[in-house]
Amino acid sequence: MKVLMLNSNRFREIPAIPFGMCCVATAIEDAGHDVKALDLFFSKSCVSDMSDIIKEYGPEVIGITIRNLDNASVINPEFLLEPIKKDIIDPLKKMFSGTIVIGGPAVGINGPEMLSYFDLKFAIRGDGEAAIVEFLKRIESKIPMDGMEGLIMRDGDDIVEDNPPMFVMDINSLPFAKPYKYVDVNGYKKLTTPLQIQTKRGCALKCTYCTYNRIEGTKYRIRDPQYVADEIEHLVKETGINHIGVMDSIFNLPLSHAKDVLRAIADKKMKLKLTAMEISPAGVDQEFVDLLKEFKIEYVIMCAEAGSDTTLKGLGKNFTKADIFRAAKLLRKAKITMVWSLLLGAPGETEETVIETLDTIKKASSMRDMVSIAVGIRIYHKTPISEMIELKNSFYPRDNYLFPASYTPEGISMERMRYLAMRAALIHPNYYLLGMRGPSPFLISTTKIINMILRMNQNPFIIHMVFKRLQNLMGMGFVKRFIFDYKNKDLLENA
Image (cartoon, rainbow, N blue to C red):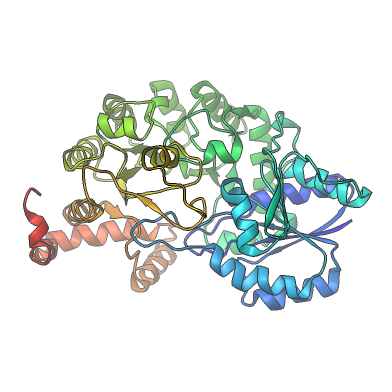
């Protein structure tokens, strides 16, 4: 069969190479089908580009990968399915009469609701490599879709199939992704986008807000460390990109596997730039830090989320404040930069726990670290936090949280949390409040000029931190805080 894969992610804040789509395309091709891919991330006209490739290629089936429901921001929520519907799916239905199937991480969260929203018939959840091959087999052989693992099917207004995800238990059996074959990797290279590597799938953690184990399963499915290293070597050779980002839910759990992966990569003796590695304080010891140090890793993302044991319990974390201090001490001693991820607003959160979190991170972090603060928790379907709300309030939203909705703890208002976070960001040059206005066009342009002159590759937020420090030295930081406090004088007490 002739299959066309479409990447629908056009969210500029997250320029991600569509590795999932490339994995699925590879599996389709290996199963004996003809496949092409259209990456709409760089498209100036989705309608025109889709029309051209449909006329030229004549696909029988079109698969659309959908990465995110929204930007996960409570402060400034952005529903990402709306432009996908308007710019891609609605026009596609007018120009293509064949079978359309959607897949990707977002479908693993709200597949039935997405079919209704887009007015489509088929969706696939779980590991797309296996599910799409079975889906195509049934279409080609005219086998009924009934009971197909991973399939969601809609007939009229009714969901008639809503089956459990299809997972590949031996993920070492899957072929390497081939992004260089299906997408313009040079376009992503210009945006300094890393190659995305998974060392495992699934997540055994039980964080109250997270969707990973709904999307990938509740058990770790481990990739052989040598296989991971071989894939990195292959991708670097074929793409010319040596910037590697590990896209596991959490990289360093299980810790022994993470160490084996780092050793296997090190044995290749490749010149790599490792970034965007999300780690848990629960999986940091001296040996792990020494392995990271060997790579001269640019930074790790420290997924602490909170600095109060009460809040950590409300988030369902498997570590304590003491673990945060222990892990941070080891990483600071090794001079490894951390990007701290904080999430205010968990069940049990109060003003005291917010202040405790900010104080903990102030003590645990260094001036070269960046502290990213998110205020409020986006509620997703069938997460522990949504089930807690429904049990407590007998409330079950008809859209199953397809549209952005946020959780507000009983002990503190969203407004108060935002105030405390913004004030901390004004005091500390290396703190950044997610969901607020990012680097200005001027700052982004300045960063590009600095990088070009000095032949560097600095992130705009690094330059942003430097500018904020200069402002503080000149007294402008004090002026900004004074104006902020004056405008928010009703909220200033107890600050």
